[in-house]
Length: 276
Image 1 (cartoon, rainbow, N blue to C red):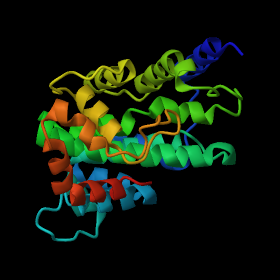
Image 2 (image 1 turned 180 degrees about the vertical axis):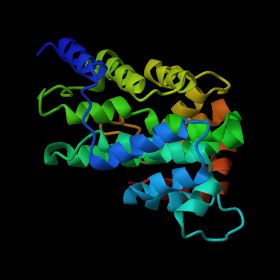
Image 3 (image 1 turned 60 degrees about the horizontal axis):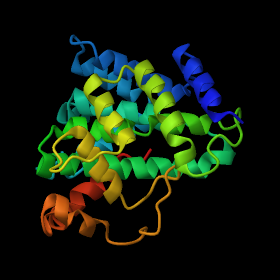
């Protein structure tokens, strides 16, 4: 199998608009388009969110997560949840639904898709906390980067029925040529902002700046600290060890471990709210 040619074929399919979306993802795309309109009103956004029950449930759950519910007052309706979160965070959740459902529902890769989404939820939550408490970049954008960074991987999982063996072998055999090539095509179709695309390019390149200061650096830290690994990039012999200890030289002695301990409830609530 000429894998590079397969990846080029898949990317061309994406560029031609041959992305199949489920009904729920289609509704989420309508939400994305509506929220991109500066004239969009709260009532309009709330009605669109309510049209997709899974998205509506995640919006309410996120509004009650510790990161957004500082008062402790529980919200039970979509309209108030949208108002509390703001359109940017609702957009992130709509994108999350689209991303998760890109993998489709084929039983042959259902477990891999579920693990990849759990990994993504942890990375997005950690990105939000690391951005707010350490790298000092915008937490909402950082969380969006975490949500979208594996979008190419989700789509590749959906194409395994057409290209059996495409992801066989170690990640080094296909990641550089394939994941980035397909990922860029999907990001373009979803109209992902340039700053987010640049952050994901940093992830594909794998270069962490010291000291970490960008969205890309935030993403790389979050991926390394995520307690659930990606099935597409299995961890090596270090799996299972205390990941925070390896970042003392980057972050400062014990600083990261302390930050994660103090933010444990916030990370847990964000991750739970993102699990579609």
